[in-house]
Image (cartoon, rainbow, N blue to C red; front, side, top):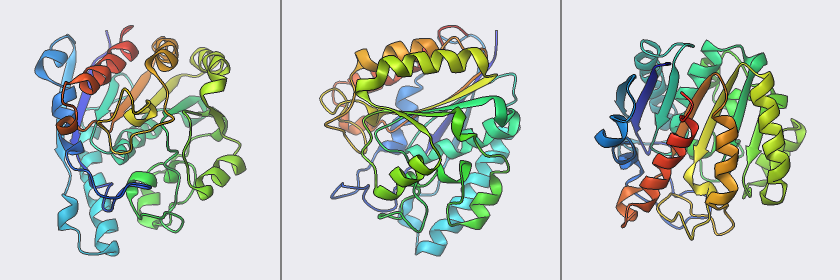
Length: 291
């Protein structure tokens, strides 16, 4: 039985400013890890370990340069803490926090696994592929993934990513609501996108990836879901998917022999009846059901 290393990353540092199309900042996403990875939930896994890391608060940021340097320092420290515990023989699960915390887990993936035989699956309404130059908000929340495919516009952060994801091994799933620069980047790199009308094809694609690739990294943002069922998240999506759309895909991915997982963007203080936390736990349980 593989060991699961859960990392609680309490952070909203990726959200220095209001998220794209949002009028104001939302607070509390940094509390998501403690609610999703509750003692009761963790106790259901026999062979596991928990790492905890707290990011600097956005309130402490003075300007853009300070923001970049703070991000760099926090991710270096996080990488140091996680590298001591995570190896290619375990399952690394990061729970945030805003989506940018996934930078730390994906960094572990591309370091510990052969990128030529590693798949990347992005469940999200947003691609998170802006650069610092193209981002409307300047939030790392929408930039964090870019260094794994190209350049983010911050050289020191890009240097942390020594190995890039192969575009032909990447799949984006969700009804994308993206800035034009992100869509252009996806087109230029010929990265596969599956929206709600192509989920049958997505299932077949994922099955093929599980069969041919040695490792699969899954980055799951709760705002992929329709705002009717998930409103306790940073960017609720009126065009999002439903549970019936997503769960069959996760079951396919659960058969991979080697997984790493991000689960992000739960805001507990907006989840009045706890349904979003429960759904987040269900997603993790589904992906980990064959461990």
